[in-house]
Image (cartoon, rainbow, N blue to C red):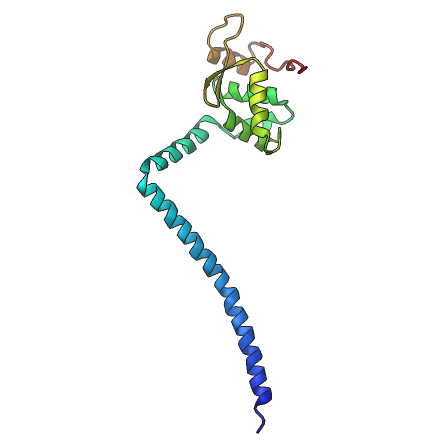
Length: 174
């Protein structure tokens, strides 16, 4: 009795099953790696709870300070300067550069490039309508005519009661 063809067939089946087992192991290996990463992150936060507080506070600040409902659509078609002014108006005269960058990218005013943060900072600084109040944080300056505080001035603009030239073109760069 010749067992060679049967053995050869079984060897092929064995190879096929080994390949199948290896393919099935890949997601398990990936899941184990993800699990190790999560365990490591938990360990870091348990060793230093202050890091977690900072992360949670930063995440809350981004969602509290920037509302992304309809203003994103209204930014479309604006220049960078017009967009940062509109964002500041919407947020009571205060603008955070990183939040503004995310809104402008989401609205399609700019693309997410290595230089996008610099472009937002340049738009804020070159407009001459903001004063720096903190790291990456700016406030609209008071209107030149002394029409009250920033919030009052921006609420007048939002209601259409006045136009202080917020959307005039920026000074040309020489």
